[in-house]
Image (cartoon, rainbow, N blue to C red; front, side, top):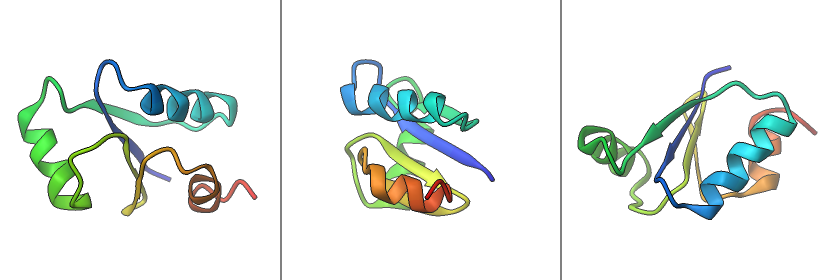
Length: 77
């Protein structure tokens, strides 16, 4: 399972999502769109959103810290 999270440095919901991943032993790739303009453009193209976090689980896009959607996508429940 491939998991990416698009973040910024001071995003509380990004931190909540990363803490959720840690508690559930989910390996992920973090991409800081604050420092990577190309990644920011990629995130907007994939999600249609400029806000973070944007999480990609095997190609499925989840915008924001949405615990039920993350649990479903990660098959935790």
